[in-house]
Image (cartoon, rainbow, N blue to C red; front, side):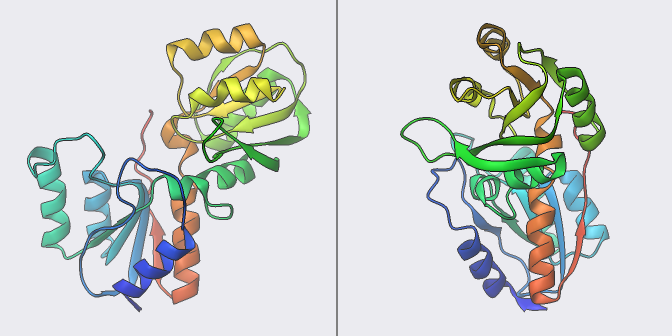
Length: 251
């Protein structure tokens, strides 16, 4: 068991980041003062909240929380339902967006790379901004088709594959979630392939014209690993009970 303020302070310091984000990071909804049982998940959807209540959670830790920049600030509709449920059961909500993507040990990106067997070598991103994407090597070179099958087996999701010109794939870039915009930087680095969660219309043309293999493996599927890794660390550090609850999402 740990006091909520101590848990939040430790986690905030652990995930300290200079990235400009689209939402507040840290404690978004305050519940009971002590935490014994922690539930982690990807998104603070109503389904996750209901599952956490059934699991008798004192706090929930997620990647996608609430209060996004540009959204309606009024507590109505779905937002009201979710917040009312949390507050009625005195459950705290901790949410970490870009800081959780970026963390070098527990982050979505480094954990995704480990899941897929990548040898991480460095980071890259948009010039003039802190880098968040990673690049490295496959431990075993694969054809584009074989690598698509590897993604499917490891992530449980058949990826969209835009074939590239280099076979087999040896060098790889990756960034979880909606990071398709980094494909041009991946191509400029001379990488054989780039993996992310989502695809845009223009991404396909960029992949074809640069010759880089592109794989869109699913936003949710690529961001399932940071929250449980972080929560598992917190559980071990503070002797908490922890359960990761995966609410399936095909997006």
